[in-house]
Amino acid sequence: MYRFDTLAIHAGQPNDAATGAVTVPIYQTSTFGQLEPGVHRGFGYARTEHPTRRALEECLASLEGARYGLAFASGMAAIHNVLSLLRTGDHVVSTQDLYGGAWRIFTKYFAKFGIDFTFVDSSDLAAVERAIRPETRLLWLETPSNPLLKTTDIAACSAIARTAGIRTVVDNTFATPVLQQPIALGADIVLHSTTKYINGHSDALGGAVITDDESLFAELKFFQNAIGAVPGPQDCFLILRGVKTLGLRMARHCENARGVVEYLRANDRIARVHYPEFGAIVSFELDASVDETIEFSKRLRLWTLAESLGSVKSLFCHPPTMTHASVEPEVRRRVGIADGLIRLSVGLEDVRDLIDDIDQALAEVASPRRVACAG
Ligand SMILES: *Cc1c(COP(=O)(O)O)cnc(C)c1O
Image 1 (tube, rainbow, N blue to C red):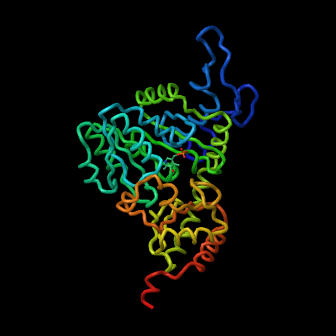
Image 2 (cartoon, rainbow, N blue to C red):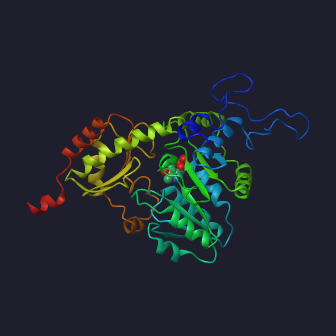
Image 3 (cartoon, rainbow, N blue to C red):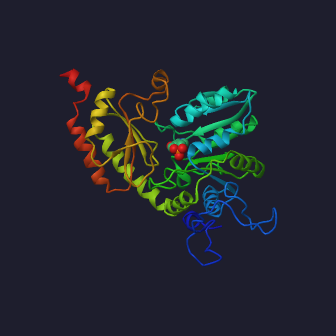
């Protein structure tokens, strides 16, 4: 078995049999000629099976140490695919501070079909255990969580779920398989927004669902074809191109993030830094109102204010008014998403330039309130 960086370049990607092309071609086609009715060369119709997509699916599965992968048009389409396993009356236990779009599809879409969700602090194993009911079917984990970057013990949670006869799903978008491989830790399904680190260049949307369970795969594959939220060949090509450098990129992303965290922790204008000591997403709190935080955000020049993360280009967002705007204010407060919270996605620029930019922006905001009060 080859190692990670070799798999990223080779898994699912042999040289093209017809031409020797070293890169998997963009097969820009919606259908495939059949030999006789119902008999084809492995590809019948592009929604069902597609060669560029299959290369991506095989590569992503291998990077998570699993046999089966499915690619989708977005991370949300991948989430929709997994939740399609549920039926009316089923219950899901989920990490509390999770991706805002996941929260939205759970509570405003799947809830309509009589599926119930309980949100818990999944870093608290007793809370996870207490939330499980006889009708619970899935344990949904996001770790590190969004935007507070709390970590969950995937192995311990998967063991709790397995004992209760429940499947564990891990949204591995933030950590990537470079830093964390949930299947090896006991999870049944791994999910990605490949829009983020896996593609890594902010030029395509995508999602993936990965499992090592053959019957689960058959069910999810049926939904993929039946629902049809598949990525086009061009996007599969771009994501497959991006993933080849995932190992390299993550190493530098993490190194830069450590530099930024060191700077933030040493700065007394920063009320709090959230960083799980790995990865390249960093959140920090300014001791400031929403309006003051927006003022700060306007002063950054190199960092781009944008939704999304995991790009070569450094991005930042203000979760209360952006990624988590669809979460009710009192829920945000309860889970600890402060008005002055900023989430950074540390990119691959020279870290000194990234720090200098934050430094000049902070120099222009009002002094910390506690100092102002003391004076
Ligand atoms: C972005 C994101 C999603 C949704 O993915 P899209 O590609 O934007 O649809 C899901 N989970 C996490 C953790 C994300 O960051």
